[in-house]
Amino acid sequence: MRTEGLSTLPRLDVGALGALPVDVERPTYERAALGAAIVHLGIGAFARAHLAAVNEAALLATGDLRWGIVGVSLRHVDTRDALAPQDGLYTLALRDADAAGTPRERLRIIGALRELRVAPEAPSAVLERIAAAETCIVSLTVTEKGYSHDPASGALRFDDPDIAHDLLTPAAPRSAIGFIVHGLQLRRQRGHPPLTLLACDNLPSNGRTLRGLVLAFAARLDAGLHDWIENECTFPNSMVDRIVPRTTADDRARIEARLGCADAWPVVAEPFLDWVIEDRFVAGRPLWEHGGARFVADAAPFERMKLRMLNGSHSALAYLGATAGFATVDAAVGLPALRAFVDAMMRLEIAPTLAADGLDLQRYRYRMRLLERFANPALRHRTLQIAMDGSQKLPQRILDTVRDRLTSGDSIERLALVIAAWICFLGGVDEAGRPHAIEDPLRDALAALLADADRRSAPGFGKSEAERHRIACICALGPVFGTLGSDPRFIDAVARQSTRLREGGVRSALAAFD
Image (cartoon, rainbow, N blue to C red):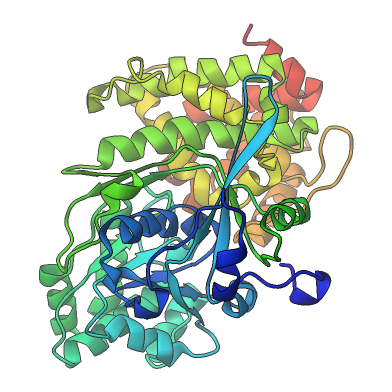
């Protein structure tokens, strides 16, 4: 985050809008008249680059100002502290490159954030917003780990410390699920109408998953509340596709120079955006079509396509790329052998599992467009950012595809290399011995598991048998691997690829697929 004291320029705020360069898009509606019909939990860069941006387009196109956003940070003060002095305004920088590879960007000031809250500071204020009669939508981008669930089974983890706390402390919850259910409880008690809960995170059937978690929590509180939520509130599934790298100091300096004023927390994203949503909104919705959203009866095929093709390939590039020493995705995909590997993985091992969904991937050049997006040199999307929270991401990005392939008796060797690369990445150093941090909610458990697997596989085994035993120990982690951890076909494939990685490195492992 950048603080005001680091710049001699005036701060971006409502008063600065009129002095911005003419090529910078900005709000033209009366921001003082914005309502607060949307409460968004997890107001980080991803939400500000897609939901708020699409909502901004709807506000500009329709003039229906009911649909302002109350942004809620569930953990940290950074976003509120950066944007509150700016009247909630921030810059969205859409970056790509021209035919010659020269970076270019378009700047847009987003004004859709009416209010910013930090949940731990004032949990009652967040509950009041969810319970308010004018609230029609509660949306979420809290990352996979923010759902307090078991990634392999999808079940709510009642042993999660935040969930256990929230069941006993209705006035001051900590988790997204706790805030939602206790807010809905207040809403029902006051006789206010039901609303829509919209998950925007990378989870399979994210709306259905959220619904199951909310109902499981509500059932522990009040059977009547459970039934009211189940029968009256809606949980549409959705799929969001936009690459949003972490904003850097260089980004802020470049954007500041363009604006002529200081923006403490701009957001950088690619121009591409695809947001597919099931049109089930019990209390109405903005006309997000004006921002490029697509409304469908069933989002599941689009979710699977994105999770497996884009997110699965992103994870492959992250773990193989970071292990090989590549700092960014465009650099990783610039290695011909790695690009060819990801291309073949999508074509030969992932796309066949999507055939029954009826989406014509070939017609839309989906695979080739992904490779082009990954190669965008203007984004500089860091591999370590994508590599975070692998225990929460890999079950839906890679392991569901593995299950489908094994069911049909097909090869999983490329997918197995991604899992082997993740395990290698968890060692905390790349091939050159450079250390990297492991950011994962299961970090301590994973570290202990790796150490135990190394100890148990060392004595009395030949080299290949020892590696298979080691991988079997790691894959026994139920919250990540579920029943795959006991499938010898999966263990054998991961052990083969892990052996190649450990003995010859990333390039040697990739060469085996030539």
